[in-house]
Length: 363
Image 1 (tube, rainbow, N blue to C red):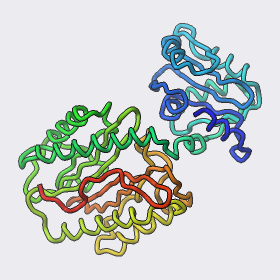
Image 2 (image 1 turned 30 degrees about the horizontal axis):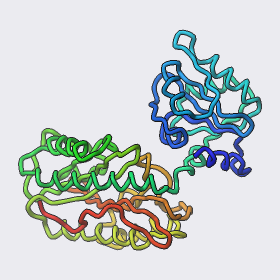
Image 3 (image 1 turned 180 degrees about the vertical axis):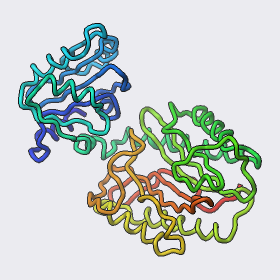
């Protein structure tokens, strides 16, 4: 995997001599090791001109060594502080470096330690460049993602059988989380959304424990499973016992937009054109004022990662990418409807990894 980073470093247009990774998806993708961001800085620096250098808290040295990743380890103790380890690392790496960092992950105190260690360093936010190593999924990655989808869909089936009038969103959410683990998830992909009635109009709302679901309520589920570091992300919207004609019509518009997104997705199509096709389906309806977000995002070790399916993003879909197609409409104080699928871009088309029914369903 490290070869991917060297290829990016040797591409002159990226203007980087080295990349600094902190614990997270890229770190795990390169080393195979899962570590967590905490108060102790832990950096892996991949350079054109020197073997990898790892700045490692002493209590993590054994775990890192067990990975058998070829790097020069500079360890540091809490009592001594970490600055001397940064100073030593950048003595080895040389001066006047153009250093690419993960701008969405690296913290200010890590950047300050780097700048103190190397006064002439030039730091670049290379998050998008570094993330290219995870854009096109390998077969083993897709195997984990398929399992994560299966776990989520089995969980949803079981949860729908559990739902009854008078339950709270929190009760249903707790049951769903329990079933995710029972069906084989290593972890939840993110905090699940179980949103009913007017709460579903908040596309990133919080489950309530003081509202009991009623007949006619819309119930939106947005959740996923994590399997071996890879995530699924599925949204389905249901109605309890009955649905009004207006809400059915609104559902049909979202359903059609989702279908358009899956139909259009194939290699060579830009994120702009894909999003534009989906958005036009929503905009040409009677519910265009209820649009609040783009079509989707990349999915893998992060729940939200490159590429982002949105207008003015002219990157092209490529074989092996996994994206979400998740159009939604949200009528404030009334309801929200979203249908989200995890879609693999294939050689000349796409495959929806999620297969749970998208037809309007009463529960």
